[in-house]
Image (cartoon, rainbow, N blue to C red; front, side, top):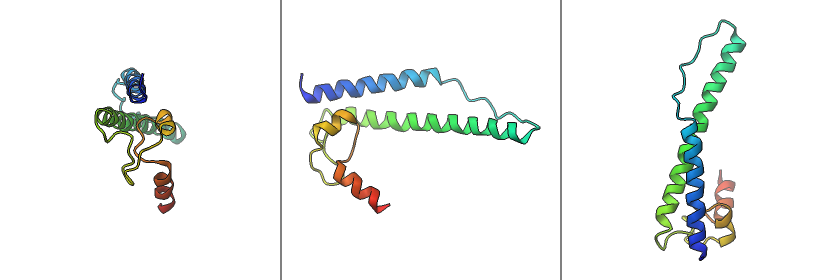
Length: 112
């Protein structure tokens, strides 16, 4: 099995795992409850906000995986989006949806 095939299978596995967890949390978020006690209200609001953040992160991650699955069919998969150099297989094996090599990622983080 080639490295590219292994990476495609890993991306598919990650997508399936996220979709499974997403299906478990597809129930609509309940409306925010109103509590007389400010501590209870704060706790309820925090839980609601956290649920929204988790869903947002799942959607972002799924989009990245879907994009990587499309790219794996092309010659552009495994290339850094910034410097266009090949991303080492060891990095792709750890995070197959990565878009940047370590050098560019470190540079971009230092720029922040």
